[in-house]
Image (tube, rainbow, N blue to C red; front, side, top):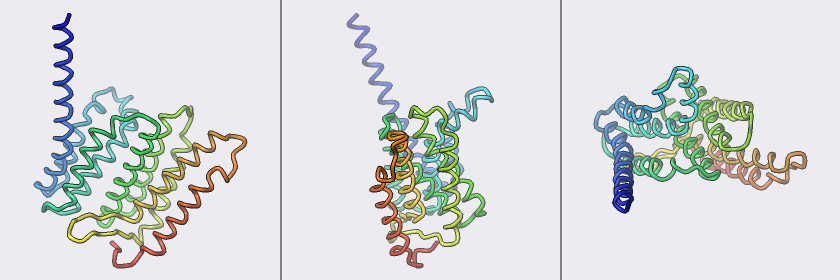
Length: 260
């Protein structure tokens, strides 16, 4: 019996080591192969191959699986695209993205608490909108609007699927539509903050929509908590703070020098 328990523990330790190694390999490899190849194709293929379980189902379950894994896919694909648009030479941003993706895979993605799912959604919004905004300089604006809708929809759904809500279709669609509308309004004046030769670029739109996503979720939770007794005062603090913060960003940090 003791030998059996010891063998089980050894296998568990070995599988944990393999799991960590494979995640690190994906986190580092997705960025590394994108830089070395000068193309996002191999990096995107690596991300999709790592999610092979999504596609290993019958056709009628495929869309359900895709929706359930949208946030993780958005993070992985965004990491690859941000790497690609940073250039084909190694910069500080590449190592930052390696670290972010590895931390995501090892520590953030496996969490399932309410606060963790919110954090996962906000990370997906920030990275996803960052990639879409930077990419939009070379694509049709309709694609920017559609992808922004998809990111907003996925982020909202990721939080709500963990809650007790029975029907959250309207909530997720509204969030997606707001993301699409804001992206469309900001398309002609896209501000990207750059940090010297590091290659780090942070779009203003990504910051604004991440703040909105947090406030939107806070308001939703307050409405559920107070139901018929809900008053604006229950969400007044976060709403006012977010509005002021977004106002400061738009009015004080929109110098044309940052325009993409």
